[in-house]
Length: 374
Image 1 (tube, rainbow, N blue to C red):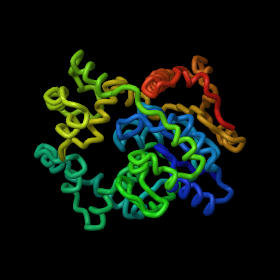
Image 2: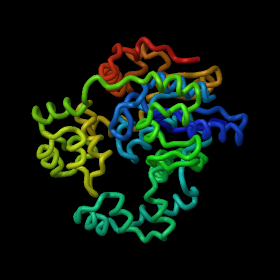
Image 3: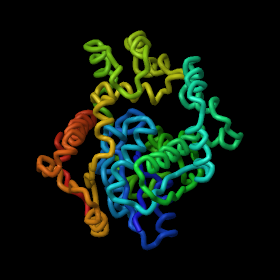
Image 4: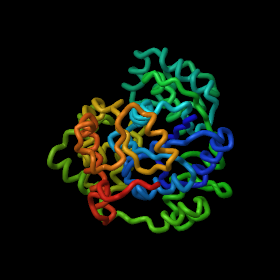
């Protein structure tokens, strides 16, 4: 049995270890494969640790295989993030996908059914009035109180997108929900030995309290940014203010951004954030512009067999052998003819990894020099 996990591990903390241990306890014979975000994450930020360090943490925690969720999917909204991940996982044919969520699968499936059947004109009217997409959907659907509460929770939003993506790709798989322990996704506090990843990133010096020892060993040596991504974005906006080719774009957004782009980063985010444009959405637009992660690039590569191994055990290679797709174990082989269909993804990934290393003051071309961890 193969159980898959979609993760960022930004950083790897006690809640992640709890999930892996729960899977091991319930399915002791299972192999575990993780598809993990590469150098940049869904909030539109650089990961606190490079992808190779985070893959090492996952292996130490007991997973069998870590494959890469490329930057073109890892930095997008929940729907694209989930489709990108499931579109790769389908080539491994997992028997189950495990994810953290706050509600039952049955409740989430009821919500999905109501969203599928909602009045699209009513949704459009709410969006036109300035509501965010999430709020507009909430008002357009006849949710019960429990459904309305569940619909707003961050982990549930991703969980529902995983369920929908499996349906859309025809992936017949079981879902293994793991209820969050301690804090919620964005909580700015801790409970016992559990804290959210965002809290840990904001209080790195206390990270040893909320991460396994092997993860703390990596985290305490994290590298600070050497320059501001926002400064590159500002230059690019002066050079070309168009944003329409990026997925998080909405008509008129560039006017708001140009009006505030002279401000420092935090003031800029504060000025651009509203009930219509979340802080994360603005940050994703910034990163998409800087890395040129345009919508056409993303759409034409969803579902392609980008099976790039970041780390594997012997059991992980057994998983790989069962895949009908070609698996990229050594990045140096990316120019082989058999990988032509994923070349565009890998070219963007190489550029993004190099940009990340420049941001962190590291050496470029680590995709070619880092060997998988066995």
